[in-house]
Length: 199
Image (tube, rainbow, N blue to C red; front, side):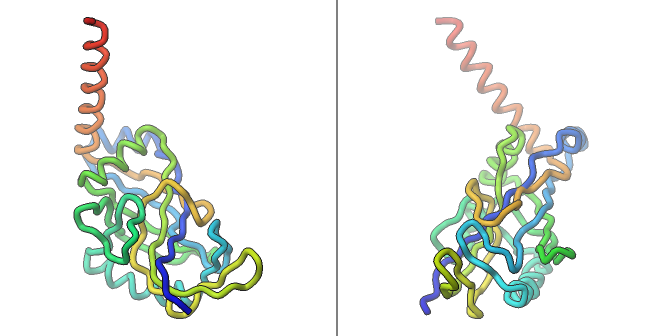
């Protein structure tokens, strides 16, 4: 079997406006939480991950989280390497719930890519969380593939198109940088409108 880059998508919930307003007022970081991955269920790419494989990889990933280097990117690159110049978020915690789902808490960073995520969330854009890993798959039937033992989890990225159901994230709190970015966008829009009206 040939190992390949495997990506799996789940939607993250829309921003809670009350929490978003409170976090902007308090100048706190933007924290989102939700389902990161689901075991034993076929995703939108037709792949199924066993609980055993995901549990093994989650155990390894918890060490990466502990070392404060569980970074992810905005959009999936075609690479097994997390590109630091495109880092958008940091996974703070990840564990199983009672539904065979990995749930996590993620800090959106004040990097260029992180600020794009913040502005998209503020505009009520529905984003997804998607795992990125390397591994082989075996065909089970016409529309289902099983992920094999050689699978290695790399990270979770923010993306626009899903492969796993219900991977949307919701905002828990926010940052001062977000407010500054929103003010910049508002100012830019006002300048554009003003320029048109003077013509």
